Figure 1 (cartoon, helix red, strand yellow):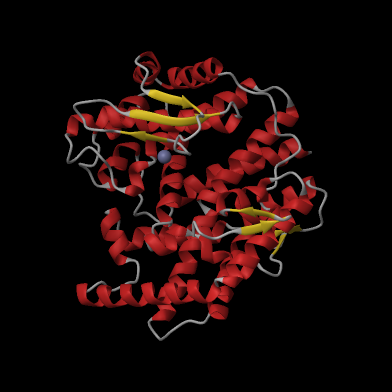
Figure 2: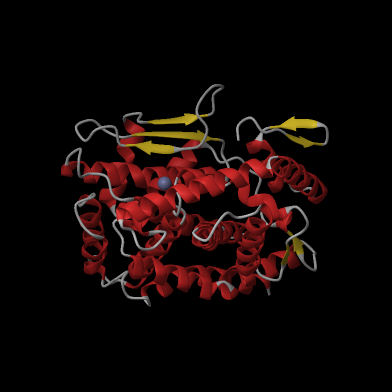
Amino acid sequence: MTDLRFDVDGEELTLEPALNRLQDSDGELRRRASEALAATFRKNLRTFTLITNTLAKDKEISDRWRGFEDIADSRHLANRVERDVVDALAAAVREAYPRLSHRYYAMKARWLGMEVMNHWDRNAPLPETPQAVIRWDDARDTVLSAYQRFSPDMAEIARTFFDRKWIDAPVRPGKSPGAFAHPTVPSAHPYVLLNYMGKPRDVMTLAHELGHGVHQVLAAGQGALMASTPLTLAETASVFGEMLTFRSLLDQTADKRERKAMLAQKVEDMINTVVRQIAFYEFERKVHAERRNGELTSDRLGQFWLEVQAESLGPAIKLRDGYEVFWTYIPHFIHSPFYVYAYAFGDCLVNSLYAVYQNAERGFQEKYFEMLRAGGTKHHSELLAPFGLDATDPAFWQIGLGVIGALIDELEALDK
Ligand SMILES: [Zn+2]
C-alpha cells in the first residue's frame, strides 16, 4: 500500500494525500482525485483480490480447526463480547440507516446545491466551516472548563497533563502523525501526542486524548495486566470527553452558520464511525461467508462493496464508475478481520451513557468514575448495570442511535 502512487493532475501522490483531496472544497479536484484512486486500485486489483481470497481461506481453516462456528466468533472472543450483542448492534444500525445517513446526506446535497452527490462529495467541507485558528491556551481552557462542568475531579486529573508537560502538542518535521494517549506503565504516567494546528477538530482531538489520559490514570490502580480494557470499551472516556467538549463549544457559539457547521461535522464523524463501520462489517460478512464456497472474483467483491455502500449511504449519493474498487484500501480487512464493528460499538455505547447523563439527577459522576477505575477487570454487563444500561438488550442500541438522530433533528431545525 505504501508503494502505491496516484496521479492527480500530474502529481504523483501517496495514498494519504490522495485521500485527503476528497475533502477539498473544489468539487472538480475531488472528482479527479477519486478517479486517480480508482485507476491505481484497478491496476492492482488482481493482487488485492488474491490477497483477500487467501486470507479469508486461511481464516476459514483456522476457525474450523479451533471450532469457531460463526465467521466473526474469534473476534467476539477477543473483544469479550457475545455474538448476540454484536448481531443486535448491526441490526439496529442497519435499520437506522434511513433516519441517519440517508436523511443527513440528502440535507447535505441540498446545502452543496446538488440534486444528488457523487461518492467523492461525501466528505466535502461545508462553506460555513469556521477558518479562525484557535490558540493553544484557548483550547486548553475550553477542554478543562468542559471537564470542570462535568466534574471538578476529572478536570483536576486533566490539568495535571498540562502542568507537568505530559503533552507533546506542536507539529514538527519528522514527528509521528495523528494523536494518541499512551499509558506507559501504571507506576509512571500516560503521555499524550497531538499534532495541534488550531482547527476546531484539533480541540476535539485534545478532549479525546485527555479522556483516554484520565481513563488511564484512573485504571492504573488495577496494575499492568488488568488496567487496559478490551477494544469495545477502550473508547469510552475519550468519546465521552469529546461529547462534553463539543456540547460546551456549541453552547458558546452564537453564530447560526458556525453552529450548523459544527453540528454537521459532529454528525459526519458519527456517521463515519457508526454507519460506515457497520457497512464495512456487512461487507466482510459477505466476503467471508461466500469464501467458504470457493474463490471470489474481483467483480463479485466489487458487487458486495457497492451493495453495502448503496444500502448505507442512501439515494442522495450516487456511486459512480470506479467506486467498486474502493474496498481495496481499508487496512482492517487485511490486518484484523471484523475489527471494524468495535468503533460502532464504542460510539453507540458512549452515546447511550451520555443520554443517561443528560437525564440523570445526581450521582452519575461517581458511577462514571467507578467504571473507569475498573479498567479491564469487569465484563461490559457489570460496568453498565449501575447506569441501568444493558448491551444484551436489543433495545439498548436505540438509545445511542437516538443521540445521532437528535443531532440531525437539530440540524434540520437550523436549516429552516
Ligand atoms: Zn481514541
